[in-house]
Amino acid sequence: MKKLVLIFAILFSSFFELIAQTQDTKFLIEEYIKQSERQKKTATILMGAGGGAIALSFLLALTADDWNSPGFEGGVFLFFAGSATVLIGIPIIVSSAANARKAGRLSLELNSARVLNPENPPKTIYPALKISLPLNSSRR
Image 1 (spheres, helix red, strand yellow):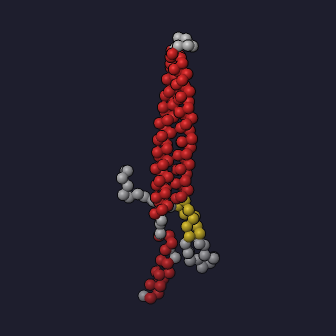
Image 2 (tube, one colour):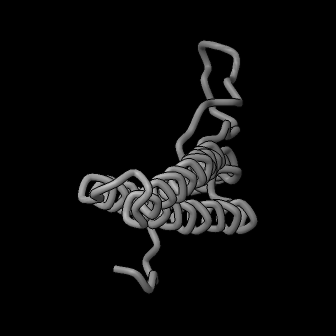
Image 3 (tube, one colour):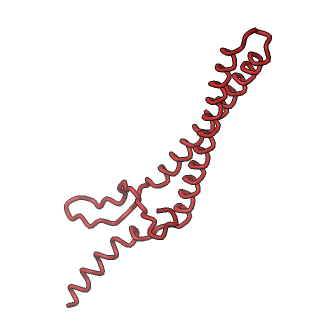
């Protein structure tokens, strides 16, 4: 019985570092993901509105009778405004992708554990992928 208790004590003492998770990293990952989703939504709206303005500008310019008509001038104005809106949306979507990569990088770490290996020297650091499942999430 004493041997069995000793074996279990040694076995569980080698895995105690694997059980702990820090809430700070989990909170930071969630914040990066929320920020990435907000930025992606904003960039999509900006780029869609800009694309719509560009399409409307072509329609106004093609239906204008003269170069000096208000429809043609309005089309030119809408073209530049839509182009600026699309160009503003590009850095926002790039920033969204960067925040998503930061969240992914935080979830990939090197963990350490004491592994009992009688043949080789013990390996204490190994790559690991953290996967968390939100069981009480409000979004399902």
